[in-house]
Image (cartoon, rainbow, N blue to C red):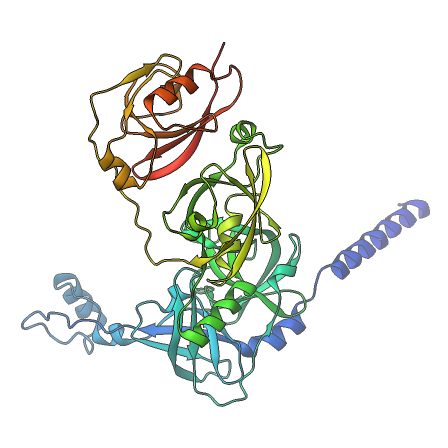
Length: 472
């Protein structure tokens, strides 16, 4: 039999484990009150598209009233498109939430894009047709309006800027059509840039998001909407632990602009930038890899008029540090066109402050193409292993540049190792402007050994900086 002492030890262990479980449960948030208060303002969104009439097989019987066995035979023998009923039925696509008592609803643009009719289903099961007030594809936001009186439930709007990585957040939406599904997680990171989404600093979370959650709200523990669930990273089509939400600060700015003018304008400098890596930082004498390197300036754009130069490294914009190059479009895009902005740049190893008027981001960016004409004059630099020629007047006009040399031939050497190609235009070498073949040869002949060297190259109209080292 178990001794009294052993019984006491077992009982003590059970009590300790019980208290630990209770303590752990006490540390976890309880979302029940938040969900009860917020759910009435969450909506399901479906759309309908008008489909072209389908061709009907002559003599084909009506399949709707047939027994299943015969219907299956005819469906295999005479394949058809979707029935008229299926084509006209609204398709549940996503979620949304009410932001004003008079019926403004916010959702993702991709949820309602190309829809002929939009339907909003409320928490009381009413289904209302919605008007598309405006949409902004760049931020993937759409503002809808429903006519349901002036006392609709609304969400509380929070400040996404106050979010911190590790903070609890919660999503409510309609994944796969399951209305009012609740999932929770934490903020993984802020200010994420995604491909083709340069103007949205996404909130990354591990909240489970699936098709149908798009456009739904992301709440903090105070029951405030801090983001709009928009995208997931997945290789399977389902949730894999990475979901992304549009910050509410960005969304409300878009909402106000749509309400005021029906469209959205963003700030624009007119520059092509690139990331500053370790080698570029060494080349520009920066203490650490940080900032946005100006590789190209659009002629006549705000940066051109404001005195920004190719080779400048933008370290601050309107008092905010530019740590990564992707930070700059986020900051510039939030500035209204016509406003003045302050930039701190590193130029010629010195910090300078510039002030310039921010322009409006154009719908399309046109970049000139390079022609293949080249004069006969050429020279070679053995240290780089490239042959270069002068720019023609036509190339200067097409690219709107005033100086540089064209790579005619690439041989074995540092040039080939860094990926130079015939037709590339070299405009800067070792932080010095290249205005002729002679200048290029002089600079190349004096390049230092065992140090990172930068070179600005224009390829197919687009400029970027590359780095290399010369061995002794």
